[in-house]
Length: 35
Image (tube, rainbow, N blue to C red):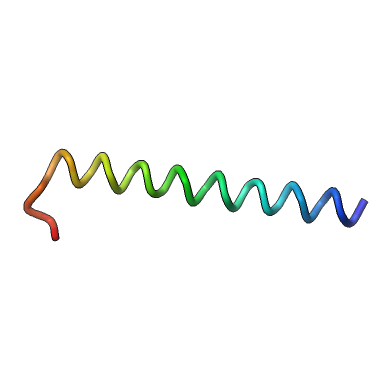
């Protein structure tokens, strides 16, 4: 159980980080002035 919970939390964090990166890239493409 504990190992499964840890795996799920790790997957959630990695997924959230990837989504955050994509959002940052989209925002950068829309507004290239932000540096």
